[in-house]
Length: 300
Ligand code: 13P
Ligand code: SF4
Image (cartoon, rainbow, N blue to C red; front, side):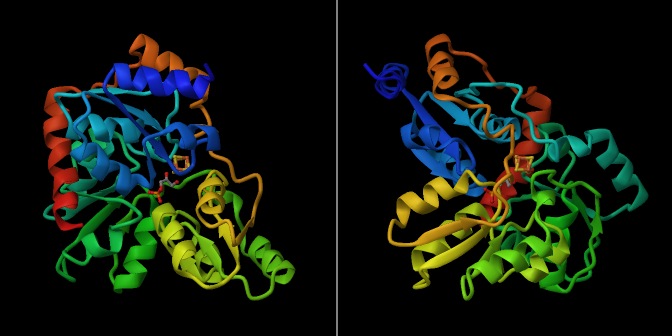
């Protein structure tokens, strides 16, 4: 039996569904039931019937699945797979920020801890942030945490002025406008896609700032044959698999999120076999965090 067959047999025996983020290793994406961006996986986690959800991605994603499914078992193959951006703000810091701006609405990017979500009025993902943020009145005071770049991107699109927490993604810091210019010179005419977690000069130098799910949709719909991709390189596996007639070039090959690579076929198999590590969120935090996540899912 191959390790892939072993994983599928264990998933069937344990009535488990395997969800994998678009940045995980190609072989992990291939063995999963569903692959997607944070929004697609949160939606899937909210609707699956399986008794167990195995989340191949980073910890906040598994936590979101646990928040939405208090009666299900959520497992993560490597519990040390964190997101440095999510760890750039604590619940106490959100409380301090809210105390400084009474009456303001606190909005968190889904890349945040359950404790931070519990302090917020609304959650967004990169795939729905514009749509969700449009539902706030233009004069509403918004505190956006933790990603300054996604927050700045949406504020710019909607012509609003948010108070931005200075968090950022170390992986998306690796791309520069110069790298984009060089990639354009090497592949003239190819559209440039970047993630909204990239800094403003990078977004300005690109053609589109899209979630990973948005990039997959763009690649499907475009008639262009060559596409330049400025995000974590794990996405290339799915882009190439779904669009074999098109060519995708990473703008920066070393744009790797080490935490997204922590899930391997071996630890995924062991996780299913041993039922570890279970992701739990204390009930009091989960109940409050769920409000922000469900408010988002109800809009988008
Ligand atoms: P997406 O929701 O676009 O997949 O982004 C998740 C993420 O962690 C980006 O760094
Ligand atoms: Fe976090 Fe960046 Fe990795 Fe996404 S790519 S999980 S934001 S560190």
